[in-house]
Length: 219
Image (cartoon, rainbow, N blue to C red; front, side, top):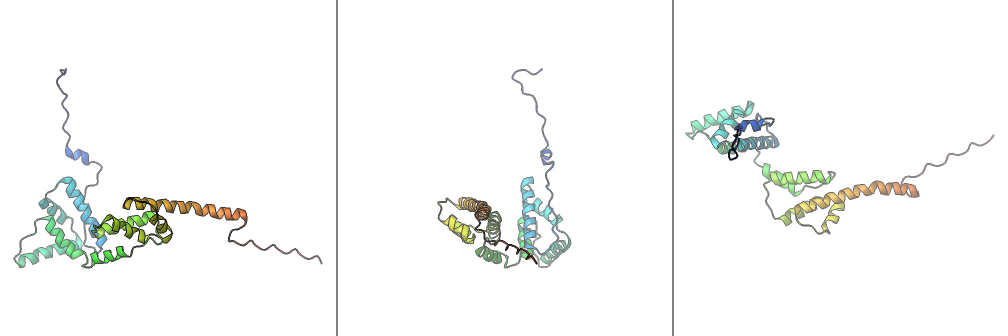
């Protein structure tokens, strides 16, 4: 029996118990020359490193085990080349990442993405998809700019019909502008079916009625 001042002992939970059901494995990287896939691999690896609290040396050791096919050959060649040149062995993830980015990201990758952002337009995309693409390009370009400039860049890429309505509204920052753009898109979509049905009922729709068939002449 426990006395009133005694607390029941709790079983110590293994930290790994909390990992059940979580996908914490880092995918392999085979050296495919696709910048988006490579950067996605780096992000996934670093999320796992952060969660498992690996130090930089452990991160390096885990990362090289995930290099396969061409990426593995490239790494082995990098080691030989550095040994031949009398350079120190790579032991840390931050150093390996630098070499990986130099090899698997095109030199003009950042510049190309900046140009894409400059000319990004909503076009046939929904406002939701445009927001996603806009934010993705900001992240890829590591672009940190004033809120006013970001808002202006975003509005400039909207379709004219939505941009005109957003511009005359009072808004407070980028998230507010996104909310307004979504609101006006929803409003426009809701009005179109109504306008068409109204036109049909009043006989003013743009579709011409079929000409009445001629009655057969009696012989």
